[in-house]
Length: 530
Image 1 (cartoon, helix red, strand yellow):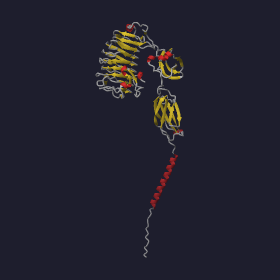
Image 2: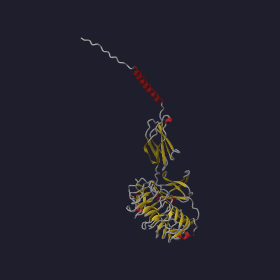
Image 3: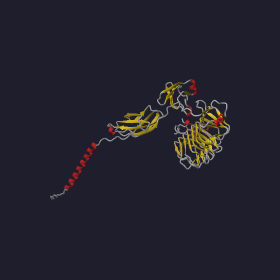
Protein backbone atom coordinates (compact mmCIF):
# COMPACT_ATOMS: atom_id res chain seq x y z
CA UNK A 1 0.00 0.00 0.00
CA UNK A 2 1.39 3.28 -1.04
CA UNK A 3 1.39 5.93 1.58
CA UNK A 4 1.13 9.44 0.13
CA UNK A 5 2.94 12.16 1.99
CA UNK A 6 0.67 14.61 3.86
CA UNK A 7 0.52 17.98 2.13
CA UNK A 8 0.34 20.89 4.44
CA UNK A 9 -1.10 24.24 3.30
CA UNK A 10 0.06 27.14 5.31
CA UNK A 11 -2.38 30.12 5.30
CA UNK A 12 -0.99 33.46 6.17
CA UNK A 13 -3.19 35.47 8.48
CA UNK A 14 -3.40 39.28 8.21
CA UNK A 15 -3.55 40.14 11.84
CA UNK A 16 -3.77 43.79 10.94
CA UNK A 17 -7.17 43.23 9.18
CA UNK A 18 -8.51 41.21 12.11
CA UNK A 19 -7.50 43.95 14.45
CA UNK A 20 -9.27 46.59 12.41
CA UNK A 21 -12.41 44.47 12.06
CA UNK A 22 -12.61 43.83 15.78
CA UNK A 23 -12.11 47.48 16.55
CA UNK A 24 -14.87 48.43 14.08
CA UNK A 25 -17.34 45.97 15.64
CA UNK A 26 -16.46 47.23 19.10
CA UNK A 27 -17.05 50.81 17.98
CA UNK A 28 -20.48 49.92 16.59
CA UNK A 29 -21.43 48.13 19.81
CA UNK A 30 -20.30 51.11 21.87
CA UNK A 31 -22.16 53.52 19.56
CA UNK A 32 -25.39 51.53 19.81
CA UNK A 33 -25.06 51.38 23.54
CA UNK A 34 -24.42 55.09 23.68
CA UNK A 35 -27.43 55.82 21.45
CA UNK A 36 -29.66 53.65 23.58
CA UNK A 37 -28.43 55.34 26.68
CA UNK A 38 -28.97 58.75 25.07
CA UNK A 39 -32.52 57.81 23.98
CA UNK A 40 -33.28 56.60 27.48
CA UNK A 41 -32.36 60.05 28.76
CA UNK A 42 -34.63 62.07 26.30
CA UNK A 43 -37.59 63.79 28.05
CA UNK A 44 -41.20 63.02 26.98
CA UNK A 45 -42.43 65.05 23.97
CA UNK A 46 -45.21 67.66 24.12
CA UNK A 47 -48.57 66.19 23.06
CA UNK A 48 -49.85 66.93 19.59
CA UNK A 49 -52.74 69.34 19.25
CA UNK A 50 -56.11 67.58 18.89
CA UNK A 51 -57.61 67.49 15.41
CA UNK A 52 -61.36 67.96 14.82
CA UNK A 53 -63.18 64.66 14.31
CA UNK A 54 -66.67 65.91 13.43
CA UNK A 55 -68.10 69.33 12.69
CA UNK A 56 -69.47 71.30 15.63
CA UNK A 57 -73.16 70.63 16.23
CA UNK A 58 -75.94 72.77 17.70
CA UNK A 59 -79.69 72.24 17.45
CA UNK A 60 -80.53 74.17 20.62
CA UNK A 61 -78.78 76.32 23.20
CA UNK A 62 -75.96 73.78 23.33
CA UNK A 63 -72.86 72.91 21.32
CA UNK A 64 -71.26 69.47 20.90
CA UNK A 65 -67.61 69.25 19.87
CA UNK A 66 -65.50 66.16 19.14
CA UNK A 67 -61.90 65.55 18.11
CA UNK A 68 -59.48 62.72 17.36
CA UNK A 69 -58.31 60.97 20.52
CA UNK A 70 -54.67 61.54 21.51
CA UNK A 71 -53.01 58.28 22.67
CA UNK A 72 -51.07 59.64 25.64
CA UNK A 73 -53.56 62.30 26.72
CA UNK A 74 -54.67 62.04 30.34
CA UNK A 75 -57.57 64.48 29.78
CA UNK A 76 -58.74 67.39 27.64
CA UNK A 77 -59.53 71.03 28.42
CA UNK A 78 -62.25 72.50 26.19
CA UNK A 79 -63.27 76.16 26.08
CA UNK A 80 -66.07 78.13 24.44
CA UNK A 81 -66.01 81.86 23.72
CA UNK A 82 -68.09 84.56 22.04
CA UNK A 83 -65.21 86.93 21.21
CA UNK A 84 -62.53 84.63 19.74
CA UNK A 85 -61.09 83.93 23.19
CA UNK A 86 -60.37 87.42 24.32
CA UNK A 87 -62.61 86.14 27.10
CA UNK A 88 -63.75 82.57 27.85
CA UNK A 89 -67.39 81.82 28.65
CA UNK A 90 -67.08 78.20 29.78
CA UNK A 91 -64.17 75.82 30.44
CA UNK A 92 -64.76 72.06 30.75
CA UNK A 93 -62.34 69.21 31.50
CA UNK A 94 -63.06 65.72 30.22
CA UNK A 95 -61.33 62.38 29.76
CA UNK A 96 -63.26 61.64 26.54
CA UNK A 97 -62.87 63.15 23.09
CA UNK A 98 -66.42 64.55 22.99
CA UNK A 99 -68.00 67.27 25.07
CA UNK A 100 -71.31 69.19 25.13
CA UNK A 101 -71.70 72.74 26.42
CA UNK A 102 -75.22 73.26 27.77
CA UNK A 103 -77.29 76.32 28.69
CA UNK A 104 -75.62 78.67 26.21
CA UNK A 105 -77.20 81.78 24.75
CA UNK A 106 -79.67 81.38 21.92
CA UNK A 107 -78.87 82.89 18.51
CA UNK A 108 -75.24 83.46 19.46
CA UNK A 109 -72.01 82.80 17.54
CA UNK A 110 -69.51 80.76 19.60
CA UNK A 111 -65.92 79.61 19.05
CA UNK A 112 -64.54 76.34 20.49
CA UNK A 113 -60.95 75.27 21.26
CA UNK A 114 -59.42 72.19 22.95
CA UNK A 115 -56.11 71.21 24.57
CA UNK A 116 -54.74 67.71 25.24
CA UNK A 117 -53.43 67.37 28.80
CA UNK A 118 -50.47 65.15 29.74
CA UNK A 119 -49.71 63.65 33.15
CA UNK A 120 -47.11 66.38 33.52
CA UNK A 121 -48.67 69.73 32.59
CA UNK A 122 -45.37 70.82 31.06
CA UNK A 123 -46.13 68.51 28.15
CA UNK A 124 -49.73 69.64 27.48
CA UNK A 125 -50.49 70.40 23.86
CA UNK A 126 -51.20 73.91 22.71
CA UNK A 127 -54.82 74.97 22.18
CA UNK A 128 -56.39 73.69 18.95
CA UNK A 129 -59.17 75.76 17.32
CA UNK A 130 -62.15 73.53 16.43
CA UNK A 131 -64.21 76.19 14.64
CA UNK A 132 -67.25 78.32 15.35
CA UNK A 133 -71.01 77.80 15.22
CA UNK A 134 -74.11 79.87 15.87
CA UNK A 135 -76.76 78.50 18.19
CA UNK A 136 -80.29 78.66 16.69
CA UNK A 137 -82.96 81.14 17.62
CA UNK A 138 -85.12 80.27 20.57
CA UNK A 139 -88.16 78.30 19.35
CA UNK A 140 -90.72 81.04 19.63
CA UNK A 141 -94.26 81.97 18.71
CA UNK A 142 -93.35 85.67 18.97
CA UNK A 143 -93.27 87.65 15.75
CA UNK A 144 -90.04 89.55 15.16
CA UNK A 145 -90.55 93.24 15.96
CA UNK A 146 -90.50 95.75 13.11
CA UNK A 147 -89.82 99.50 13.31
CA UNK A 148 -93.56 100.16 13.22
CA UNK A 149 -94.06 98.12 16.41
CA UNK A 150 -92.75 100.87 18.68
CA UNK A 151 -93.16 104.54 19.39
CA UNK A 152 -91.60 106.71 22.06
CA UNK A 153 -93.58 105.24 24.97
CA UNK A 154 -95.11 101.95 23.86
CA UNK A 155 -94.40 98.71 22.03
CA UNK A 156 -96.64 96.26 20.20
CA UNK A 157 -95.96 92.62 21.04
CA UNK A 158 -97.50 90.13 18.59
CA UNK A 159 -97.42 86.37 18.29
CA UNK A 160 -99.03 83.39 16.55
CA UNK A 161 -101.23 81.26 18.78
CA UNK A 162 -99.90 77.73 18.84
CA UNK A 163 -99.84 75.03 21.47
CA UNK A 164 -100.57 76.01 25.06
CA UNK A 165 -102.61 79.16 25.66
CA UNK A 166 -100.49 82.24 26.30
CA UNK A 167 -101.16 83.93 29.63
CA UNK A 168 -98.77 86.82 30.33
CA UNK A 169 -95.95 89.08 29.19
CA UNK A 170 -92.97 90.22 31.25
CA UNK A 171 -91.08 93.38 30.34
CA UNK A 172 -87.44 93.53 31.46
CA UNK A 173 -84.95 96.34 31.07
CA UNK A 174 -82.17 95.03 28.85
CA UNK A 175 -79.35 96.82 30.68
CA UNK A 176 -79.79 94.90 33.95
CA UNK A 177 -82.71 92.45 33.31
CA UNK A 178 -84.74 94.14 36.05
CA UNK A 179 -88.50 93.58 35.87
CA UNK A 180 -90.32 96.68 34.59
CA UNK A 181 -93.85 95.27 34.49
CA UNK A 182 -95.85 92.09 34.06
CA UNK A 183 -99.02 92.11 31.97
CA UNK A 184 -101.78 89.52 32.20
CA UNK A 185 -103.31 88.76 28.80
CA UNK A 186 -107.06 88.92 28.31
CA UNK A 187 -109.13 86.67 26.04
CA UNK A 188 -109.34 89.56 23.54
CA UNK A 189 -105.53 89.89 23.55
CA UNK A 190 -105.20 86.18 22.87
CA UNK A 191 -107.75 86.31 20.05
CA UNK A 192 -106.10 89.40 18.52
CA UNK A 193 -102.66 87.83 18.97
CA UNK A 194 -101.08 91.09 20.08
CA UNK A 195 -100.78 93.38 23.09
CA UNK A 196 -99.77 97.03 23.21
CA UNK A 197 -97.71 97.80 26.30
CA UNK A 198 -97.51 101.51 27.10
CA UNK A 199 -95.99 103.68 29.80
CA UNK A 200 -92.42 102.84 28.79
CA UNK A 201 -89.36 105.09 28.56
CA UNK A 202 -88.29 106.54 25.23
CA UNK A 203 -85.02 105.47 23.55
CA UNK A 204 -84.82 102.36 25.72
CA UNK A 205 -84.31 98.69 24.85
CA UNK A 206 -86.44 96.09 26.63
CA UNK A 207 -86.48 92.29 26.67
CA UNK A 208 -90.01 90.94 26.23
CA UNK A 209 -90.86 87.43 27.48
CA UNK A 210 -94.10 85.71 26.46
CA UNK A 211 -95.42 83.00 28.82
CA UNK A 212 -97.86 80.15 28.94
CA UNK A 213 -98.14 79.81 32.70
CA UNK A 214 -94.51 79.46 33.81
CA UNK A 215 -93.27 78.24 30.42
CA UNK A 216 -91.42 80.73 28.23
CA UNK A 217 -92.92 80.79 24.72
CA UNK A 218 -90.46 83.27 23.28
CA UNK A 219 -88.43 86.37 23.92
CA UNK A 220 -86.98 89.24 21.88
CA UNK A 221 -85.54 92.73 22.15
CA UNK A 222 -87.81 95.73 21.58
CA UNK A 223 -86.65 99.35 21.52
CA UNK A 224 -88.78 102.42 22.04
CA UNK A 225 -88.07 105.34 19.77
CA UNK A 226 -86.74 108.76 20.63
CA UNK A 227 -89.51 111.28 21.23
CA UNK A 228 -90.38 113.49 18.30
CA UNK A 229 -88.81 116.89 18.54
CA UNK A 230 -88.90 120.01 16.43
CA UNK A 231 -91.85 121.61 14.70
CA UNK A 232 -94.73 119.09 14.79
CA UNK A 233 -97.66 119.64 12.43
CA UNK A 234 -100.34 117.23 13.67
CA UNK A 235 -103.08 116.61 11.11
CA UNK A 236 -104.50 113.53 12.82
CA UNK A 237 -107.62 115.26 14.09
CA UNK A 238 -108.61 116.60 10.66
CA UNK A 239 -110.42 113.64 9.16
CA UNK A 240 -112.97 115.10 6.76
CA UNK A 241 -110.64 116.97 4.37
CA UNK A 242 -108.62 114.60 2.17
CA UNK A 243 -106.59 117.46 0.62
CA UNK A 244 -105.43 118.76 4.01
CA UNK A 245 -101.84 117.55 3.48
CA UNK A 246 -101.21 119.44 0.22
CA UNK A 247 -103.16 122.42 1.59
CA UNK A 248 -100.84 122.50 4.62
CA UNK A 249 -97.41 121.84 3.07
CA UNK A 250 -96.97 125.30 1.44
CA UNK A 251 -97.51 127.22 4.72
CA UNK A 252 -95.39 125.24 7.21
CA UNK A 253 -91.79 126.12 8.10
CA UNK A 254 -88.84 124.17 6.76
CA UNK A 255 -87.92 121.23 8.97
CA UNK A 256 -91.51 120.45 10.00
CA UNK A 257 -92.70 116.93 10.84
CA UNK A 258 -96.21 116.32 9.50
CA UNK A 259 -98.18 113.63 11.32
CA UNK A 260 -100.96 111.85 9.42
CA UNK A 261 -103.69 109.72 10.95
CA UNK A 262 -103.10 106.03 10.51
CA UNK A 263 -105.57 104.35 8.16
CA UNK A 264 -106.74 107.63 6.61
CA UNK A 265 -106.37 108.50 2.89
CA UNK A 266 -104.88 111.87 1.90
CA UNK A 267 -105.30 112.97 -1.72
CA UNK A 268 -102.71 114.68 -3.93
CA UNK A 269 -105.05 116.15 -6.58
CA UNK A 270 -102.37 118.10 -8.45
CA UNK A 271 -98.59 118.28 -8.56
CA UNK A 272 -97.02 119.56 -5.38
CA UNK A 273 -93.43 120.82 -5.56
CA UNK A 274 -91.28 120.45 -2.46
CA UNK A 275 -89.00 123.40 -1.78
CA UNK A 276 -88.19 122.86 1.89
CA UNK A 277 -87.11 120.19 4.34
CA UNK A 278 -90.06 118.16 5.56
CA UNK A 279 -90.94 114.78 7.09
CA UNK A 280 -94.29 113.18 6.28
CA UNK A 281 -95.18 110.20 8.43
CA UNK A 282 -98.02 108.19 9.88
CA UNK A 283 -98.61 109.14 13.49
CA UNK A 284 -96.82 106.99 16.05
CA UNK A 285 -99.93 105.13 17.22
CA UNK A 286 -99.36 101.35 17.15
CA UNK A 287 -102.78 100.34 15.88
CA UNK A 288 -104.23 100.85 12.41
CA UNK A 289 -102.51 100.67 9.05
CA UNK A 290 -100.28 103.39 7.62
CA UNK A 291 -101.71 106.61 6.25
CA UNK A 292 -102.31 106.52 2.51
CA UNK A 293 -101.29 109.08 -0.11
CA UNK A 294 -103.54 108.81 -3.16
CA UNK A 295 -101.73 110.45 -6.07
CA UNK A 296 -103.76 111.93 -8.90
CA UNK A 297 -100.55 113.71 -9.82
CA UNK A 298 -96.95 113.28 -8.73
CA UNK A 299 -94.67 115.22 -6.40
CA UNK A 300 -91.91 117.48 -7.71
CA UNK A 301 -89.02 119.39 -6.10
CA UNK A 302 -86.98 122.54 -6.68
CA UNK A 303 -84.15 124.51 -5.13
CA UNK A 304 -81.81 123.36 -2.38
CA UNK A 305 -83.45 121.06 0.17
CA UNK A 306 -81.60 119.56 3.09
CA UNK A 307 -83.84 116.48 3.39
CA UNK A 308 -87.14 114.87 2.50
CA UNK A 309 -88.38 111.94 4.58
CA UNK A 310 -91.41 109.65 4.15
CA UNK A 311 -92.11 107.17 6.94
CA UNK A 312 -94.78 104.46 7.27
CA UNK A 313 -96.73 105.70 4.27
CA UNK A 314 -98.72 103.85 1.58
CA UNK A 315 -98.07 105.49 -1.80
CA UNK A 316 -101.11 104.72 -3.95
CA UNK A 317 -101.80 105.46 -7.61
CA UNK A 318 -104.90 107.30 -8.70
CA UNK A 319 -103.84 108.81 -12.03
CA UNK A 320 -100.17 109.55 -11.38
CA UNK A 321 -97.40 107.80 -13.31
CA UNK A 322 -94.61 108.68 -10.85
CA UNK A 323 -94.26 109.17 -7.15
CA UNK A 324 -91.77 111.99 -7.77
CA UNK A 325 -90.88 113.45 -11.17
CA UNK A 326 -88.38 116.28 -10.71
CA UNK A 327 -88.99 118.78 -13.49
CA UNK A 328 -87.07 121.65 -11.87
CA UNK A 329 -83.45 122.04 -10.82
CA UNK A 330 -83.31 120.49 -7.37
CA UNK A 331 -80.44 119.58 -5.06
CA UNK A 332 -81.63 117.37 -2.23
CA UNK A 333 -79.21 116.41 0.52
CA UNK A 334 -80.96 113.26 1.74
CA UNK A 335 -84.15 111.54 0.62
CA UNK A 336 -85.40 108.78 2.93
CA UNK A 337 -88.14 106.16 2.65
CA UNK A 338 -88.67 104.17 5.84
CA UNK A 339 -91.36 101.50 6.18
CA UNK A 340 -93.24 102.59 3.05
CA UNK A 341 -95.11 100.56 0.44
CA UNK A 342 -96.72 101.25 -2.93
CA UNK A 343 -100.15 100.36 -4.26
CA UNK A 344 -101.29 100.23 -7.89
CA UNK A 345 -99.48 100.10 -11.24
CA UNK A 346 -97.38 103.15 -12.12
CA UNK A 347 -96.34 103.39 -15.77
CA UNK A 348 -93.14 105.29 -15.12
CA UNK A 349 -90.57 105.72 -12.32
CA UNK A 350 -90.83 105.78 -8.58
CA UNK A 351 -88.34 108.69 -8.61
CA UNK A 352 -87.15 110.36 -11.80
CA UNK A 353 -84.56 113.13 -12.03
CA UNK A 354 -85.09 114.70 -15.45
CA UNK A 355 -83.66 118.23 -15.33
CA UNK A 356 -79.95 118.98 -15.81
CA UNK A 357 -78.37 119.72 -12.44
CA UNK A 358 -80.76 117.56 -10.39
CA UNK A 359 -78.98 115.67 -7.64
CA UNK A 360 -79.88 113.59 -4.60
CA UNK A 361 -76.73 113.31 -2.51
CA UNK A 362 -78.03 110.36 -0.47
CA UNK A 363 -81.02 108.15 -1.24
CA UNK A 364 -81.90 105.81 1.61
CA UNK A 365 -84.62 103.13 1.37
CA UNK A 366 -85.27 100.77 4.28
CA UNK A 367 -88.00 98.28 5.17
CA UNK A 368 -90.09 99.12 2.09
CA UNK A 369 -92.13 97.20 -0.49
CA UNK A 370 -92.09 98.88 -3.90
CA UNK A 371 -93.74 97.28 -6.90
CA UNK A 372 -95.30 97.79 -10.31
CA UNK A 373 -93.24 100.58 -11.85
CA UNK A 374 -92.08 101.28 -15.38
CA UNK A 375 -93.31 98.21 -17.24
CA UNK A 376 -95.50 100.03 -19.78
CA UNK A 377 -93.20 102.97 -20.51
CA UNK A 378 -89.93 101.09 -19.91
CA UNK A 379 -88.75 103.26 -17.03
CA UNK A 380 -86.56 102.48 -14.02
CA UNK A 381 -87.73 102.57 -10.43
CA UNK A 382 -84.82 104.97 -9.82
CA UNK A 383 -83.99 106.93 -12.96
CA UNK A 384 -81.52 109.78 -13.40
CA UNK A 385 -81.20 111.15 -16.93
CA UNK A 386 -78.03 112.70 -18.33
CA UNK A 387 -76.35 115.43 -16.21
CA UNK A 388 -78.21 114.47 -13.01
CA UNK A 389 -77.64 111.77 -10.43
CA UNK A 390 -78.32 109.88 -7.26
CA UNK A 391 -74.81 110.22 -5.85
CA UNK A 392 -75.07 107.67 -3.05
CA UNK A 393 -77.75 104.95 -2.86
CA UNK A 394 -78.30 102.68 0.13
CA UNK A 395 -81.16 100.16 0.09
CA UNK A 396 -81.80 97.72 2.94
CA UNK A 397 -84.42 95.18 4.07
CA UNK A 398 -86.78 95.84 1.18
CA UNK A 399 -88.74 94.10 -1.59
CA UNK A 400 -89.03 95.15 -5.24
CA UNK A 401 -91.10 93.35 -7.85
CA UNK A 402 -92.88 93.85 -11.14
CA UNK A 403 -90.43 96.35 -12.59
CA UNK A 404 -88.62 97.21 -15.82
CA UNK A 405 -85.23 98.68 -14.90
CA UNK A 406 -84.34 98.79 -11.22
CA UNK A 407 -81.68 101.54 -11.34
CA UNK A 408 -80.74 103.57 -14.39
CA UNK A 409 -78.29 106.49 -14.29
CA UNK A 410 -77.30 108.10 -17.59
CA UNK A 411 -75.00 110.73 -16.11
CA UNK A 412 -71.38 110.97 -17.24
CA UNK A 413 -70.06 112.19 -13.90
CA UNK A 414 -68.99 109.63 -11.26
CA UNK A 415 -71.36 108.65 -8.48
CA UNK A 416 -70.15 107.60 -5.04
CA UNK A 417 -71.67 104.24 -4.18
CA UNK A 418 -74.62 101.89 -4.43
CA UNK A 419 -75.22 99.36 -1.67
CA UNK A 420 -78.06 96.83 -1.69
CA UNK A 421 -78.45 94.59 1.37
CA UNK A 422 -81.07 92.08 2.55
CA UNK A 423 -83.43 92.65 -0.37
CA UNK A 424 -85.80 90.49 -2.42
CA UNK A 425 -86.37 91.07 -6.16
CA UNK A 426 -88.82 89.29 -8.47
CA UNK A 427 -90.61 89.62 -11.81
CA UNK A 428 -88.10 92.14 -13.11
CA UNK A 429 -86.65 93.27 -16.41
CA UNK A 430 -88.12 92.54 -19.84
CA UNK A 431 -88.23 94.04 -23.34
CA UNK A 432 -84.43 94.42 -23.35
CA UNK A 433 -84.27 96.28 -20.06
CA UNK A 434 -81.50 96.10 -17.48
CA UNK A 435 -81.59 95.27 -13.80
CA UNK A 436 -78.85 97.87 -13.27
CA UNK A 437 -77.69 100.36 -15.93
CA UNK A 438 -74.98 102.94 -15.19
CA UNK A 439 -73.26 105.05 -17.83
CA UNK A 440 -70.55 105.81 -15.28
CA UNK A 441 -70.28 103.04 -12.74
CA UNK A 442 -70.10 103.87 -9.00
CA UNK A 443 -66.74 103.61 -7.29
CA UNK A 444 -68.39 101.13 -4.90
CA UNK A 445 -71.24 98.77 -5.83
CA UNK A 446 -72.21 95.87 -3.56
CA UNK A 447 -75.14 93.47 -3.28
CA UNK A 448 -75.26 91.56 -0.01
CA UNK A 449 -77.58 88.91 1.44
CA UNK A 450 -80.16 89.31 -1.32
CA UNK A 451 -82.33 87.15 -3.61
CA UNK A 452 -82.95 87.77 -7.30
CA UNK A 453 -86.07 85.95 -8.44
CA UNK A 454 -87.44 85.46 -11.92
CA UNK A 455 -86.87 87.82 -14.82
CA UNK A 456 -89.90 88.93 -16.80
CA UNK A 457 -88.48 87.72 -20.12
CA UNK A 458 -85.80 85.06 -20.14
CA UNK A 459 -84.83 85.81 -23.76
CA UNK A 460 -84.67 89.61 -23.58
CA UNK A 461 -83.55 90.72 -20.13
CA UNK A 462 -80.15 92.07 -19.13
CA UNK A 463 -78.23 92.04 -15.89
CA UNK A 464 -75.77 94.77 -14.94
CA UNK A 465 -74.46 97.10 -17.65
CA UNK A 466 -71.19 98.43 -16.33
CA UNK A 467 -67.49 98.86 -16.73
CA UNK A 468 -66.95 98.39 -13.01
CA UNK A 469 -66.87 95.65 -10.44
CA UNK A 470 -69.86 94.44 -8.47
CA UNK A 471 -69.18 92.94 -5.08
CA UNK A 472 -71.60 90.13 -4.23
CA UNK A 473 -71.83 88.44 -0.85
CA UNK A 474 -74.30 85.70 0.08
CA UNK A 475 -76.59 86.58 -2.83
CA UNK A 476 -78.67 84.04 -4.78
CA UNK A 477 -80.46 83.89 -8.13
CA UNK A 478 -83.33 81.45 -8.67
CA UNK A 479 -83.27 79.14 -11.68
CA UNK A 480 -85.78 81.37 -13.50
CA UNK A 481 -83.59 84.45 -13.06
CA UNK A 482 -82.19 84.43 -16.61
CA UNK A 483 -80.30 87.29 -18.20
CA UNK A 484 -79.80 87.08 -21.96
CA UNK A 485 -77.10 89.73 -21.80
CA UNK A 486 -74.72 91.24 -19.24
CA UNK A 487 -75.19 88.42 -16.74
CA UNK A 488 -74.38 89.02 -13.08
CA UNK A 489 -71.18 87.10 -12.43
CA UNK A 490 -70.26 85.44 -9.15
CA UNK A 491 -73.88 85.20 -8.03
CA UNK A 492 -74.89 81.89 -6.44
CA UNK A 493 -77.49 80.06 -8.54
CA UNK A 494 -80.25 78.21 -6.72
CA UNK A 495 -81.58 75.18 -8.57
CA UNK A 496 -85.30 75.88 -8.09
CA UNK A 497 -87.54 78.59 -9.59
CA UNK A 498 -89.06 81.49 -7.70
CA UNK A 499 -92.45 79.76 -7.61
CA UNK A 500 -90.92 76.98 -5.51
CA UNK A 501 -88.79 79.24 -3.34
CA UNK A 502 -91.48 81.80 -2.46
CA UNK A 503 -94.92 81.11 -1.01
CA UNK A 504 -97.02 83.07 -3.52
CA UNK A 505 -94.95 85.50 -5.59
CA UNK A 506 -97.85 86.24 -7.95
CA UNK A 507 -99.69 87.74 -4.97
CA UNK A 508 -96.66 89.57 -3.60
CA UNK A 509 -95.98 87.02 -0.86
CA UNK A 510 -92.28 86.20 -0.88
CA UNK A 511 -92.22 84.16 2.29
CA UNK A 512 -89.47 81.55 1.86
CA UNK A 513 -91.29 78.23 1.76
CA UNK A 514 -88.42 76.02 0.58
CA UNK A 515 -86.68 74.77 3.72
CA UNK A 516 -83.82 73.34 1.64
CA UNK A 517 -82.80 76.82 0.47
CA UNK A 518 -79.34 77.52 1.97
CA UNK A 519 -80.04 81.23 2.39
CA UNK A 520 -83.43 80.87 4.06
CA UNK A 521 -82.29 82.52 7.30
CA UNK A 522 -79.76 84.99 5.96
CA UNK A 523 -80.89 86.33 2.59
CA UNK A 524 -83.70 88.41 1.14
CA UNK A 525 -85.95 90.92 2.83
CA UNK A 526 -86.04 89.81 6.50
CA UNK A 527 -89.83 90.07 6.64
CA UNK A 528 -90.06 86.96 4.42
CA UNK A 529 -87.58 84.75 6.25
CA UNK A 530 -88.99 81.74 8.14
